[in-house]
Image (cartoon, rainbow, N blue to C red; front, side):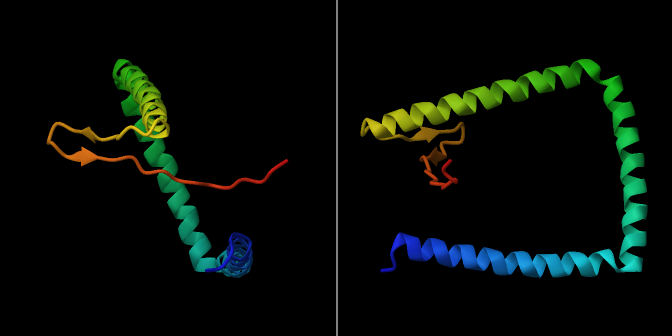
Length: 117
């Protein structure tokens, strides 16, 4: 089995290769006149769409405020749920939740690495 440093180094090498390829593609896209014309038209259409959406949202101002409050509450409750599940797992307790359709859920942990310092 390969060691952790070897796998990390392999990932870094592949990321560099991917970055080079993406750079070449970006350059090719930037020099394509038909693509740039289409992107300009798309930007104009998106701006028009955004304007129309903002007009409609202005008509539903109280509903938009309520939706933002609900989103904030859900985010807070999700953080609480994650903290409770992690604490239970650390204590060695089983963690399982069930929705209104009797579908069972189990926690999934994800490990990420970040640069130190």
